[in-house]
Length: 284
Image 1 (cartoon, helix red, strand yellow):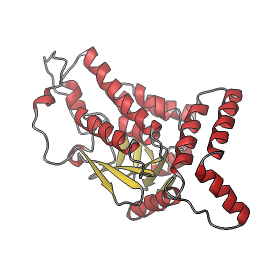
Image 2 (cartoon, helix red, strand yellow):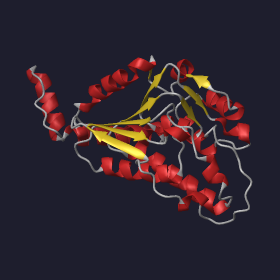
Image 3 (spheres, one colour):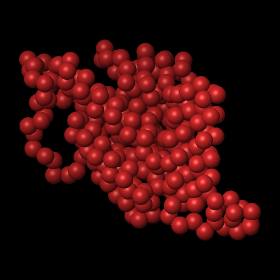
């Protein structure tokens, strides 16, 4: 939730946000960088608004994630924010400008589609977290497969402080941290620091701010050389089995492993282990 935003009374009843008529910004709302190594960096580029998730940002993120999904050279995505924060959640000023049930349902559905796209990508997504990650920004961290945070980072699902329970962020949060810890964050709106986020399992690593990029790169490097097929099969199975009973999960996992074993990269990897030599992987 963008803590810098203030509510402004309005009589608007249109289903479209007032911000729709604004001119397009000169800078892209999401920057994409790829250096050919297999790492794709996506940076939310609304630093002046703490990278709040306006409709424009949601659409830009969706477009970039869809493009990455189709990019066979991509092995890892790093998602970060420009300026002083990772992401402060939804743009409250934009939301308040269009007080309509239909508009809000469409907005949160749009956000949910983008969040699910992260989970459905065939490669891991690493959140690079600095500053604050609040409400839908905390949800964004939770939806990423991995997260590295600076020591000064803080996390909250603080909508309840404004009378707005963070219902959609609760879906991702409750699948990352213990149930009672998630519920306490949701009903109190309190911030947790990076050390507590690490203890709860919301992030994988915490480092000094000056080492954040180095640590993110090290994690990406440990993944980027792995075969794309194995990463895609494994990631899809990982999330599917979490939502099923244990017997169904084992059945699904067995089928997935059998399919994976028939892949060229796995056959070469196993043979290389038997032969006690490095695997001669191409860009599978």
